[in-house]
Length: 248
Image (tube, rainbow, N blue to C red):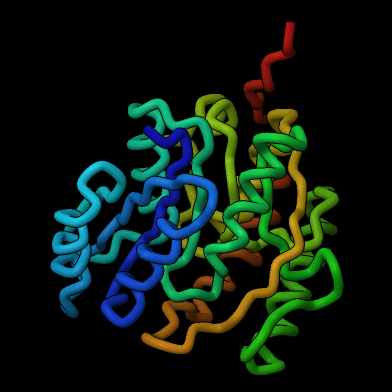
């Protein structure tokens, strides 16, 4: 039984899903994979089901009816992981923009170096993004700068979606109170962990834009993030955050 679970949300990822799952299973650290499948019409679920016959003890899937948002996909996965006693829970994209080999670095940061949340960071050592149009790079980079300024978090890549959480972080955060569904979900989770007193560490990665399939990013997602950050900060002035338990 692995204590590590990688959650991969999918919508129309038939070109990538088999390769990403196999690559995760080839890593030196042992990981289980949970696919949160949002009713892809392209047959993604059928590919996962076929692979489950090959990896019955380590590959799992939750099928949902339709696109319900990235945030709710991860919350579903987090609750699933907590019920099954996983110690380290990872977020990762299905499209190879996150290199599965970097899962080992995120695991090491949490398991051996004392981090509560390890963030695969595109911006902690310059700008490490490959194959994005320059406009997208600038928008993402300055969005992170803006979030850092508003929230006060000392994190270079505040919008990153490649992460490892210690179990205790997800147990402490009230997952039912996380309100953002899209891009801002990643910011809200980091900000909440930060306000709860957890240690957030950035691990440098190189982010490579997807080669196969189509991006799910839209302008509305950025809009949610821009206004949502101000709302998060204002709400934090009066909100009581549960705190990380002190080690005895």
